[in-house]
Image (tube, rainbow, N blue to C red; front, side):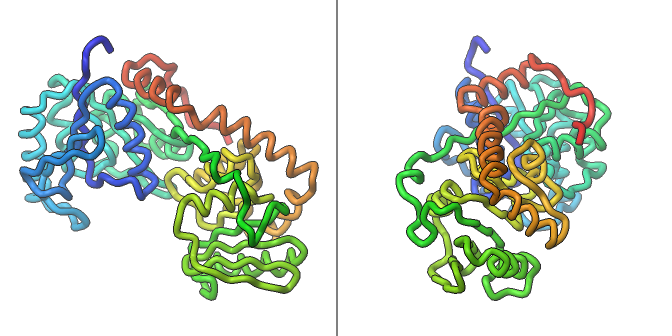
Length: 361
């Protein structure tokens, strides 16, 4: 790109807390290296212009969270088209497949800006007619995982438009300075549940099963309301793990991370473990299973498989093999910031080899 590029992003949500929001911001950041990025979002009051780092946030004022009625779709898309006319973007990035943003992409197809779609399809999502329309009205479709790519292949006939770009992830070296004192550097089992520690959910029950099965290994249970460590029949309990840096420290020093409820879009906690070379055990579906199948760990479909997988990784030779492979995968799949920016620019310029079919199992 020889001149500054004006990019407009239309999306229902603009955040970094969710996995899909985090990835959308990564792509937006890559585009900001080449020029202006304007974000048009209905959760911001109409007429509002704000600065969010390098991004210019423009309000559409339609509210969020409610159903899209025909009137609200028309009003939101009309406001968006009016703003886009004044912005004059070279690139239009559509984040998600809401009806109003699909209408905007349809109205602008062939009218000037290149249309880039990020479906942000999570595990289990079935892409309906709205998503299919968005796919057909886009010049390039960017997906973050092979799991998302599978879903898009089923819904879209234009397979040559699909580009797979994994997220950029930079490990925080400070968490390697010292381990959590409760679990130390003894090859602990860190179990992430997403449930209250005394809950009756499946994840909470599996966590208790793990700590009973492995009494000689420190088992740290990261529950939604507390953090507890079990070892040789004794337990230490404390506050819930609320800081990302604290969770990363546990993950980085663990012998194995068992994520019982990984994220449905990127499985970011699983990615974190891989970047530190920590083997993972995850459910047998979704992006987390995808990473494990790359040689970074194991997956399970029932409690017996879960316990067997942990026991296998506790073997020193097996664990070491997974750790080596995890670091290799981290280098191959989760790009450096510079490589990620280059991949995004190449995808938009249609310079990378197109995908040819659904990924093999």
